[in-house]
Length: 142
Image 1 (tube, rainbow, N blue to C red):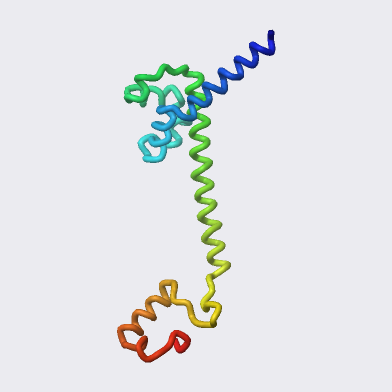
Image 2 (image 1 turned 180 degrees about the vertical axis):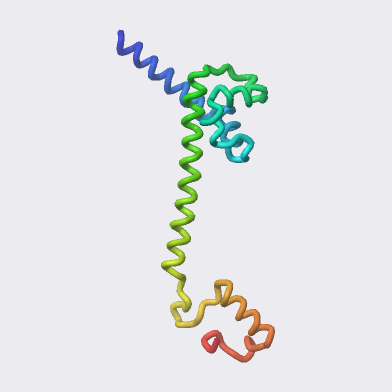
């Protein structure tokens, strides 16, 4: 009997978590963090109660009855998630730029002809086209 009750509680908890993952309040908070309407440090400086007071007049919150303890926990987790993903994006961008710096693209294709992609090559190619060299030369001669 105790197992059945604990299973029901676990199922109810899972249902609540799924509802939070798809809730309009969560989406509103994510958009508020992304747009800068609510700074990420807001949950740390003013606290969950302060954040709740800031957004309680929003249409999304009026339809929602919210336990302050659950809201505090979820807000903290959500702000950590957003901060973590923004940090990951910065790290990914830095790693990508480092990779491009260490591994430049090829300058010639498999036939040995220069490749024309890229800002420098395109600039030179357009200058050669304006002067009419593209009519008298083959790509290998460039």
